[in-house]
Image 1 (cartoon, rainbow over the protein chains, first blue to last red):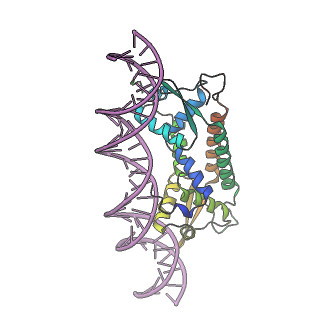
Image 2: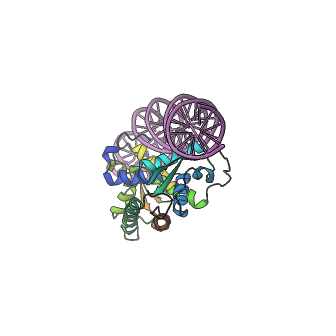
Length: 116
Length: 116
DNA sequence: ATAATATGTCGTATATTTGCGACATAGTTA
DNA sequence: TAACTATGTCGCAAATATACGACATATTAT
């Protein structure tokens, strides 16, 4: 993206957009769901579960890791990726606050100039 | 590498990613917040409030409209953009379900093979 | 009708994302 | 040591996103 004028937006807007971008690909959504469903931290098996090459999956993992949504622990020959549950809770609250503001804000109604 | 990538992405994963992508730019986050804060539906004034050209803002509006997150009603010379509150509520629930699953799923702990 | 204004469209330039093969690195095992 | 395996890095191609000026269209006002 060409974020030439990113600085003009508020920190909140940028933060929400950043996290939304992390979830803006089904592979990354799938990875988070995978990590949540397995009761053990899986490593490269993630790639085997997704319809993408190992390289591409690794790339998606790096993107989630860059935002600290997931973390990786090296264990000998394998690497264990885990969800950062605390950060996910924070992010959930950010999204909740955003959606709540959006849905409770004054909507168009019969008392407004337009009614869509 | 083993290549057993037969599983495609689920409709849920694609839907969540699609909406997340719509929120993946601060300008679109700002637009939704703007529409929620104004108690009247504003039209091209949106462009005046954002640090982007009118053309670019229009482009972002089209993206939100393509997902039906916002709607536009032509009123003579101006156009009134409004939030689709009902859809936003649905989307909020999708995100809530996703985050709840992600945060309540088994996380790495001392009883697991790794502890990150 | 003409001018002014608001909105929408098109082309285009640039930046970013996505995807993957080929290669590199590092721990494990025979 | 040497083969093996899991992970990570690099470079490249294609697709998509971002941004905006120039132009087109439609409605209102003079």
